[in-house]
Length: 306
Image 1 (cartoon, rainbow, N blue to C red):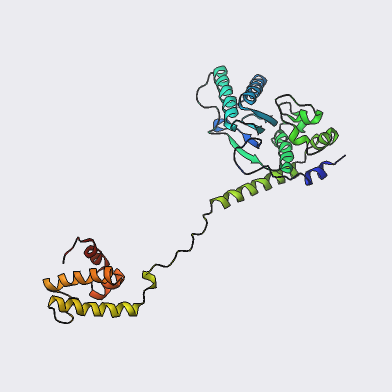
Image 2: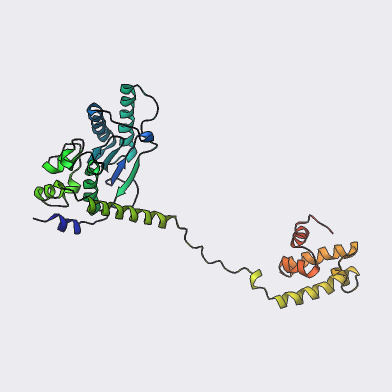
């Protein structure tokens, strides 16, 4: 006979990536809007369980564990072929209609969309089931899990499960019914809480890691960044001499602060030739002739002639 501790240490097999895939186990916890009651008496609880059974059949879900509190519910369910939302919509929608009709209210009964988290290891699963059953104890409603009538704790205490449950995942971690009863007879709140918090931290760390953007790939240096400043200067000086000679300008007139109209036209031709023919950077051309980079861009776009 394997002890619970031995079986748990050897059963930490991952159940797959996060998501909503067939066979995955989810911890689902719908809450009442504004923390209001969603159960007023045992009739409400019985109706919710009937809706749960119908939702399991319609949504292809298997219940691993549940507990009905005053203003919220904890469910541990195994997903079938249909998405998790199919069964949950059937369950919560049907029950909300019943509750509003019986208690003369209208509007939403449950707070936003139900919360859920993926149960990804066997070790976490068994502690989660015990953690769910311990909710009434932590809330001070009862002294032990066995004293609370509105949970699935009795399934594990007696090793007797209904047809709409999915106990095989948990039973496979122990080997014998005696080991199952022993593990779930008395909960260890501190141990279960540590496992619960550790799983939450792992999930949050994985979520944070998935949000981090990978570093951008190294960018090849452009041709402009590889330009030799000295070579550029030599090309510009030679081109200036050619353009001034062809335009009938005196040496240096092209770069004067207030050029004549003929010099301004020559400056435009010089800028276009320097960038497009000689391959000099536009910012370097602008600095050479004493204009802004925007002015050179206008020359190149043909939006400015002088």
